[in-house]
Length: 261
Image (cartoon, rainbow, N blue to C red; front, top):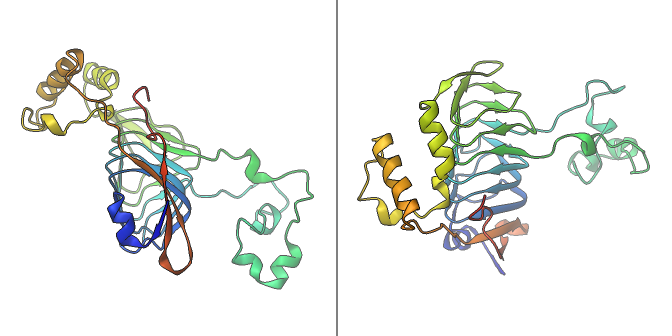
């Protein structure tokens, strides 16, 4: 375990500006680029993930695969308010530990649930939003809590996603709809079988041209069959913010995504 600031995070493979917007715990595989979005609360991100939303993007209880790409002004998995309760105001369904700054006001604290209620709304709400490996979330997109964005999928700019998105599909609109696949069905099937994000691609970068889909895919399929692809096993860490812009950095024993993931 280590305690330090942004420079310590960088030494452990996490690039941030100041890291002030990390809330709760952040699990990550190195390397990861989290460019100080507005809020990252209780999330996990795989190796080579890019979150390029300086003070705009918000992520709540998200699990992002390897090579994930999150653009500016994106909202992923935000808390939802119950629309069929007597009131949809947070006083009716939250707890002081969930919104401590609100309950600092004595009037709010007096109204706050004290934990004796039989029903707690958050307990019945899907808690994790999943962004698949190499999925791309365009600028201004909104993804509802509990939704799964499939591996390799693309969510267009300003899309409103309220249901699961199939792998390698392109969706946009409000509500978002599948417009087409990124590749032919055959290529998608081969991509999903290969799961290239499980491997260390660096030793092969001069042997392929990533702009040529079928050629590169065939190369890696052959390399995998011949046992020439080494499994990617990045170091993983848990980061917890402390006072004064410091963080507790703890090594996690296993990668977030193992060889069978």
